[in-house]
Image (tube, rainbow, N blue to C red):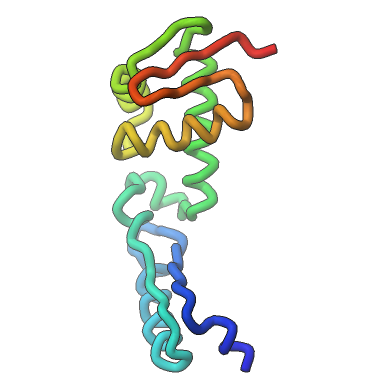
Length: 138
């Protein structure tokens, strides 16, 4: 009866990552067992295997590490590389960010989704379709 609440929902597992993908392989086996025994929609993400560097895998990064890494690099980048009261072309900002922090984001739109989350938190970055603009924080 407790698994009845799970029916009709889709689950995606994101296991920790290591250099040998042990956790991924272990969870792949468990995912198959769960899917068969409970009859629910469950899959396992390969995102960390594909996105992490060998050094990050050696440190056993998990999804929380990736989220914190993204937030911290965006914060550092904005606070050190972007001038206040200046408009920027979004593509130029993304290329500058990618040159300083490779392998964090795979494309410009993904980067600006995160930047816009930063904007909501700090209220001093404005992003339009093609331009980003920063004002001095109060």
